[in-house]
Length: 125
Image (cartoon, rainbow, N blue to C red):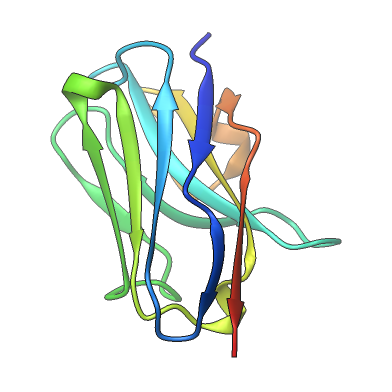
């Protein structure tokens, strides 16, 4: 099972940018759907973005469309989330996840089989 490690979180002012990185222990392209979720205390995990295993299809939550960009570097087995124009409501623990290549329910946490430990993103107003 693929192991995932996130990095890149931190404290940023509203309107600022951060890039999150998720390093995978093995090749993910064509094998896994990759996604980012976020969670605040006492709330359910919230879907942020996903990228298909094959075909380069991208999916975004409405709340981040136009501000966040998901990408992957297949040579480095790495997933990214570029976050621009950050807002205080983006504050959360962000986790990357890997699901089977034929996953169709991209926004559902139960579709994913591997999770990273998460990285904190805090946006101050």
